[in-house]
Image (cartoon, rainbow, N blue to C red; front, side, top):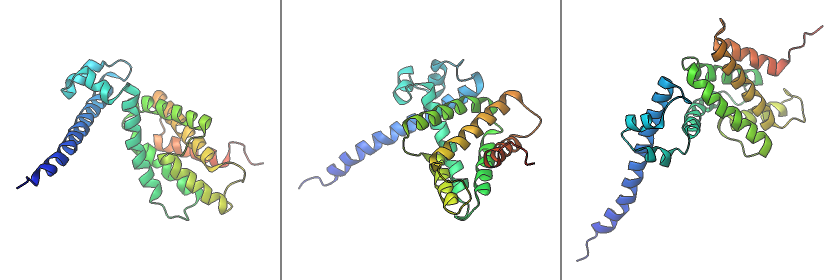
Length: 210
């Protein structure tokens, strides 16, 4: 009688290998973030990350070709939280409410991790610049903001003629630039207030009304 369990065992093997791969990748990722925070991204050694994760140097590069690849994953996780905060707003939320929610989400995520934010912010700015140049499909928070800007434009809240994705890129670039400056200068105002100010300037401009 054929062994009916054999196909099940074969099916389980790839799944187990994939699970092990994901667990190793996560362990390497978490070790890298810990070392980044301790030593700095540029200054740290891949060997130290590998040692902390209990893997070889080659295993690190198998999962992450560069340190920036780790930061890109870290940014992706943070963006998922940003998207959740903005997506939770009512569909008819004003553009002011959308921009403010984005500012608060970024501030909540990064105000306690300023050193790492600078490096992650550089990755975010490069990605935004690349998207503006290549006109690639929207991603993460950019996609959600573009959708919200499109709705606001249809309701007459925004000027016509500017693509929603371009507006999303502009506000995100502004937020990341302001936040990076905040981490370097350590001003007396909070990151939340700095980002809300950037959002106000984005929506209303800096010229005084006479």
